[in-house]
Structure formats: C-alpha cells, structure tokens
Amino acid sequence: MKKEKLAAVRGMNDLLPAEASLWEVFEARAVDVLRAYGYQQIRTPIVEHTALFARGIGEVTDIVEKEMYSFVDQLNGEQLTLRPEATASVVRACIEHNLLYDEPRRLWYIGPMFRHERPQRGRYRQFHQVGAEALGFAGPDVDAEQILLLRRLWQALGIGPVRLEINSLGDGQERARHRAALIEYFESHGERLDADARRRLHTNPLRILDSKNPAMQPLVSEAPRITDYLGVASRAHFERLQELLAAGGVEFSINPRLVRGLDYYNLTVYEWITDRLGAQGTICGGGRYDPLIEMLGGKAAPACGFAIGVERVIELLRGSGQAAASPACDVYVLHQGGGTYLAALQAAENLRDEGLDVILHAGEASLKSQMKRADASGAEYAVIVGQAEAADGTAMVKALRTTDEAAPFARQRALSLAELGGTLAAALAAGDAFDDERTCGTN
Ligand code: HAM
Image (tube, rainbow, N blue to C red; front, side):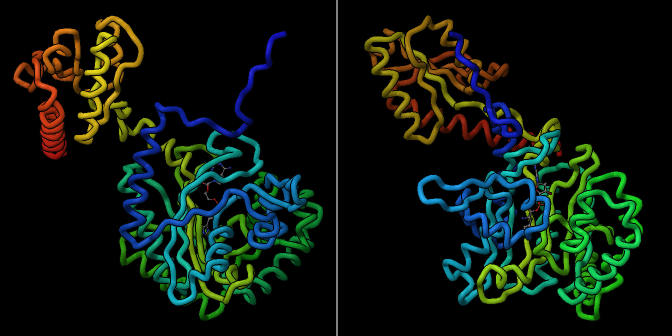
C-alpha cells in the first residue's frame, strides 16, 4: 500500500536554507537596534493557560472568539492555548517573577505565534513576531521612543517607505462615553449591521470599527470618533507624542479609525503600513496598555509595546538585494579516503580552532566531484589533502572565488598543516577588509 505523503499543516511554513539568510539579516539588525535602546530579551513558553489570553486580549475579539488554537491537556485536564501573541505572556511572566518590583523594564522577544486565520499572502497560522514591551513607563516619551526605534530599524533594513498611522484611544471613562455613542449610532442603523456587528453591539462595539467586511465600511467611516471624546489629560498625552515625533523627524498621520484588534489598549495606538504587500500591509502594530498589568493580577503599572510581523518584513527584504545567500562555509576540505581522511580531519579541526567555518567532505568521491561540491558550498578556499600531502604533512590550498591572478592562492599551492589555519584565517580577514573598503568606496 502506498504511504500517504506527509505535508506541513496549512498556513504553517518551513523556513528553508535559501530564505534563512534573510531571516538572519533581519534578526541581527533587530537585535542591534533593540539593544541600542536598552531592551533585554525575554523568552516565554509557546503554550499558556487559555484564561491568560481570554482575559488579556479580551473575550469579544476576533483572536479569542475564533482564532486561538486551544486544547485540553489530556493528562491533567488544563485548558491550554498556543500563544496568539506575546504581550499577555510577557506581562504574566513579569508579574509571576516580580520583575517590576523595583525598576521599570524594557523587554523584547522573538518567536512564533499562532492564529487560526484564513491563510493568504502575508497571513499565516504560524507566524513570527519580534516585539518589545516597556513596562512601568507612563509615556508619552516611551511611546515616541519605541516609534523612533522602529523607524531606525526600517532604515537599517533598507525596506523603503513605510507609513505610520497613530491614534489615541483615551482612558477607560472616555472609552465608556465613546462606547455609549457607538451603541446608539449602530443601533440606529441596525438593518445595516452584519452578523458579527450585531453580536458585538452590546458586548464590544469598538470591535465593529475594525470590521474587515467591505459592506460595513461606509457605516464604520461615519461612526463617532474616539478622538472627539478625549479629555484634557489624554489630549495632552496625544499632543506631546506628536510633538516628540515631529522633533524626531518622524512623519505620521492621525487615523481616528485606528482601534487595533486587541482590547488591552488605551491612549496611544499605532501601525506601520506598506502599500507593497497587498491586503496584509501592516508590518507592525502597537500601543499603550496601561490597564493590562493590573487586569492580569499585578500591581497597576503603565506599559506600552509593539510587535513586528516578521514574515511581512522578510517579504519586503526579499528582492531588495539586502542579503546575498550566505555561504555554507569558509573552507571546504577534500580528501582521498583512508589515511588521507585522518589528515583531512585534523586539518579541518585546526581550521575550526582558528574560528573558520569548515565543511569536511563526507564519504568517498573523486576529487573532481568533491571540487564541484566545494564550489557549490560557497567556500572561499578548497583545502585538498591527497596521498602525497598526507604523507608529508601538508595540504594544497586553492582560492575558489577570485579571478585576480595576484590574489593569495589564486594558483594552488601547498602549506604545512601547522601553518594552514593561521594563514587562511589571515587571508579571509584580509579579503573581508578588502570587501568592506570596496563597499564603503561605492556608497
Ligand atoms: P497585532 O497587531 O495582532 O498586535 O500583531 C502585530 C503584527 O503581527 C501585525 O501588524 C502583523 O504584521 C503580524 N501578524 C499578525 N497576525 C498575523 C498573521 N496571521 N500572519 C502574519 N503576520 C501576522 C499584537 O500582536 C500585539 N501583541 C502588539 C503589541 C505588543 N502591542 C503592545 N505590545
């Protein structure tokens, strides 16, 4: 009987080696920028109690109502969920480990998130976020600082124009007044509400504003705006944020319809959007969530944060020429089996002692076919340990990537095993410096 082919779960993607270098570029730049603003890494589990997200994100949200991968732990009956986002998890961890006891915290994370959405370009069921949470800061200076951090990251990645939309959701009382106005408005247009909106009218009318149903858009665009309900303090917070952004040279537009899809926000909310990714153009979303820490059982403390959709940013990076496929190694070591393998093994270990990345050819093959592999590996140098070399403690070295006759090892030449590692490490470092000089010169 033919065995059924096993494939990945729909909406959950493999990351193949050809793409991995783009992810590495993204991750390295993100970590550099986050560190430049004093953020420290936190890692929380992928699985949490369902109640954390239900309470944190809000019972009447798309995520909690229909997108969570939840299950009962067969062993102990606990209700668990694959995290759909990490803000609630970070807050839980801070409360559990008393991290906010004597100082505020700037924390960042990276990892997979899970939402049972309909997969399409830029929308997956397993996707990745890089996020940051600043806990214990009242803002709006920290709100602005996070936006500057993100602007710096987009620049470091060279991903081209991304526009920033901001809004303020005010405080609890202001939202309550806005909510009453929304209910009144939507009730008066009851016949135009879709099923979702009708269901949410009295539980969470704010969510009607981020309805994805095109038929609802005219109604939504005429709905009462939260910005008209802001009091003096909220208005001052929002204005100061705008002043700080302007002082930092950040362009933005105010979008009074921007309400975000999670219930924990207050005051500042924002999204970074590109027009180059089709319908899923939001590459980052965030804002302030002052009520959340107390809602999850901690001592009340203000906080704000953001999360970047990594797949979407990678798509912008793809084709931008940012990351050449990174070579698998610096040096590829060839041999002729038997005793030559032992000498080659030693040579490879010596090269690794010098910090080089080395592939030692596995198995037996002709030198010609090994040379093809060496070429395909992207290595700068081939090191060949044949019978003659193994006998006299040497190796042949050949540069694989140069057309310059004067470059070191452009012509194959022998080195003693003792000098091999040091010589190639120096040659590679000199080559890097030469490349850097050329890059700087052309910029
Ligand atoms: P979010 O807006 O739900 O916010 O997600 C942030 C970003 O993750 C989105 O802008 C998008 O780029 C990406 N994203 C979301 N869902 C998907 C998906 N199904 N496939 C691919 N990418 C996706 C949050 O998650 C909040 N925790 C952000 C935050 C942190 N707010 C304060 N702190």
